Amino acid sequence: MQSYKLPTSELTAEEVFRTRRTLLKALGFLGLNAWPLLNACTNYAAQSRDLNGTLVNLKQLHAPRNGSYRLDRPLTDQAEAAAYTNFYEFTHSKEVWRRVDRFLTRPWELKITGLVKKPLTISVDELLKLIPQEERHYRFRCVETWSMAVPWIGFPLSALIKRVEPLSSATHISFISFLRRDQAPEQKRSSVELWPYHEGLTLAEGMNDLSFMATGLYGHELAKQHGAPIRLVAPWKYGFKSIKSVVEIVFTDRQPATFWNAMIPNEYGFWANINPAIPHPRWSQAEESLLGSNERRKTLLYNGYTDQVGGLYNLKDRQYFY
Image 1 (cartoon, one colour):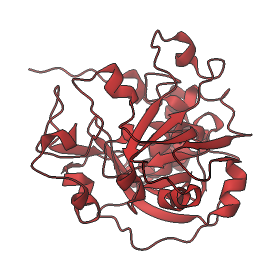
Image 2: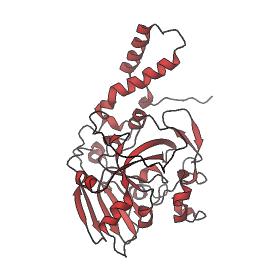
Image 3: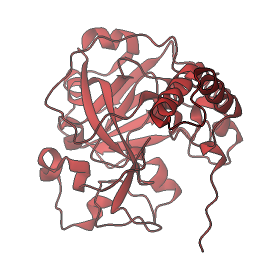
Image 4: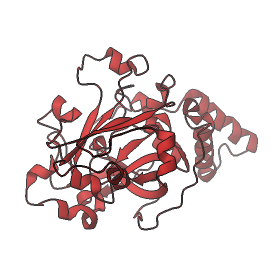
């Protein structure tokens, strides 16, 4: 018989358990079939904890929803999405929200350089005055086979690209995150010399309408664990391509180095386009688990965005999926 060990990160905190039990007892529901109420209490308890304060005092954003982007599944609960994230600068566990309190996201400048006619250095707040924001509902798929569906707020990357006017020689875009060893524990502790985190797209991918610079989520500015104050979202690629907390964008005439490809080149390539038929070297990508539920679904080619991005690649060429 196979045994299963529940990770510590998935255990219910003692104070949350006691809060639920006390409430149910007070209402006289202990011992009764009260699962609907228990689920409601669970959600309330998760929200009331506010994940160490990372979901409180977030600035509310007012952005119209772009109805062109529709989902085939319900939105993931806000607390579930915020409690289960990867951000290796802070921790190797999913509980990033426990490690981001010292991370400062204001003031924050974005620098755009390289092969462009109009290089730009601008604060995020000033940038958002120049480019209108909108809300888009996207599927998000992690290479670890979990997925979520969330309402990002931000603007098309193409709007920013057009402002800086790339030269004809520009073919790729490099994205660089922050380097703050005093604020990001793993940057200080880790022996990895590849910090800051860096990622890349082709210029054609960046100009695709799906490529999105997110500044908010669930109607508010980004929580720190989601990559505040600005991040890339490329929903047809595995999540590690959607670099968080961007400080610099560089236009170049060659394929840029990327963090995970430099770290583990036999497992993570430059493209990372989602394809259920091509497994990761250590696990299948044929199915995914929806965050916050017990539901599993079959993985969709390009995460379901084939109509939008399929023309960028040759489906028969395996290189585009590594």
